[in-house]
Length: 107
Length: 112
Image (cartoon, rainbow over all chains, first blue to last red; front, side, top):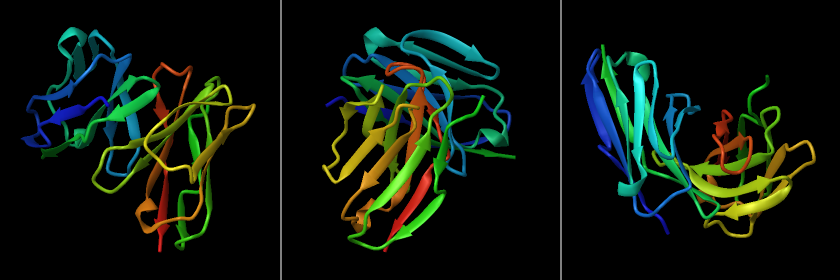
């Protein structure tokens, strides 16, 4: 089946820093989403981005479907950005999540 | 507009028992997906229901079963519970089976 790999697995940054999270997938997909899971376990949808670039405030995402990767950019990090970031792809009526990137933003 | 809700919030069962978890989808959404998330892992896809029909299933045994009702709410049933079934169970609803998913807060199941 399709493989979804996220990097880095862990990231520790000072408040105000910028970061780039990567998601690689092994085959073509129907769509791709980025999520943020807060410390209480709630998964928040960030982007639905099967291709192209989208921006929402300090966050932006780019998916290059032909090269099978997606990037999530976080600028001017805040402590509330801490948590786990997941990408998830949809293929053949199955939704596959990566193992996530755990982000710690230090005050 | 009401978001995705799940019940109960927490549940403790013993090995061999059966459990039913419930999910109410966001208004207007006809698709519900269920996931199992073990501690420190990413969510694992269990199955998806689209307009009351199962529309995709992950690598879970048949003792994991589900239903979707005419109002598009859904149930996840797990029979013959095992210790490894202890996890956070998440449901997500979407406008259709290829659209953005919105997650509920989850049900934390502990099997003793």
